[in-house]
Amino acid sequence: MKILVINAGSSSLKYQLINMEDESVIAKGNCDRIGIDGHIKHTAYTGATVDMDCTFPTHTEAFEKLVEVLTTGDAKVLDSMSEVSAVGHRIVQGAEVFDKTTLVTDEVIQKIDDLAELAPVHNHPHALALWACKKVIPETTPQVVVFDTAFHQTMPEKAYMFGMPYECYEKYHVRKYGFHGTSHRFVSMALAEAMGKDIKDLKIVSCHLGNGSSITAVDGGKSVDTSMGFTPLDGVIMGTRSGCVDPSAVTFVANKLGMTPSETSDYLNKKSGFLGISGISSDNRDISAAAAEGNKRAILAGEMLRYEIKKYIGSYAAAMNGLDAVLFTGGIGENSDDLRADVCRNMEVLGIKLDENANAGLRGKLAKISAPDSKVEVWVVPTNEELLIARDTRDLVEGLNK
Image 1 (spheres, rainbow, N blue to C red):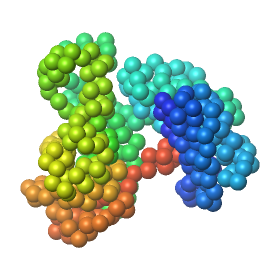
Image 2 (image 1 turned 180 degrees about the horizontal axis):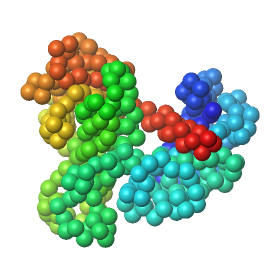
Image 3 (image 1 turned 135 degrees about the horizontal axis):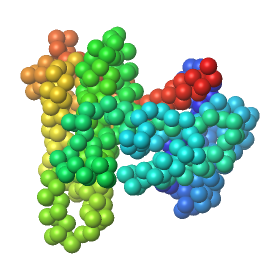
Image 4 (image 1 turned 90 degrees about the vertical axis):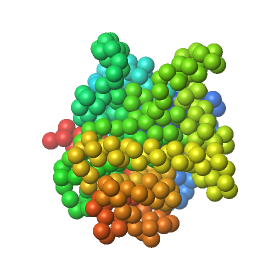
């Protein structure tokens, strides 16, 4: 079975074609600059590539080019799209409407678009991509949507509600939704397998750290709390996102700068975080390099992230009444050994003790990095959201055929 995984943005269309027999990637690529001019970069398992400018007025033309490079030319990997058994799509926001992986219908696409107000940057482009895919992919090929928010639908009411008037929830659906759910679900399951334990018996804090970061408490395989909230802005400091801020500080600064609500959102989402604190960059690698040279604001940005991660680990251990493992994933979590060391330092009160040698130099590999006598295991677990989307898609489609 071959499954095409799609991750659509407002001006991009990332994809992977996965062979589910051995879960290998047959081809992957990105159609970029949709609605601007257009560019595709495609790589086949053979090493053959396509890297060219195109014309992508809409997502439909991007899908047409995707089909073309998969089925023709030197980097082709399929004789026809009929070889694709199903298409799996990543969707950011499913709200309370979708709590599990779902088969695509016209009604489902419309509901995803209707949720655009809750995720304006993501959901409308997702819907556009779904409509475009229906035009290009054979009608007999089932399509499936996997929601980032679905994993967090197991949070109890006390964890997802805000201390605002209840009518905000009833009328406007304002609550914590959480994000990165597909990643947190994948890595927590992968960790349980690596530990040789049933995930139902584990209390895990999953730290997905990248340009966007979130921490999730996973108790018995279920999300019981997470750091991102109504939007991905909440939680720890990120590349350009502020993370958690006193709402009164937000209104105070907005009044001082004369910003509209939209401009305030832009200020917090795109001009804050590492970029706003350091004044240098939103990229952790640049921040780390500047910190190593003694830049005080870069040092501060790094210290803020580490401190906030520590607090979430401690609070989630309390919320779950115990802790068996902490895992690090995402671009920063998998590749920054100094961050992992700093987060785990002075955490013996929770039973966390790092193996400095195992951690040093580790990049993007599944590995245990806690000391042999650590009561809580610490791991690096590379994430693979595309593979989990493909697995979900396969399982749903195979269930339909039984």
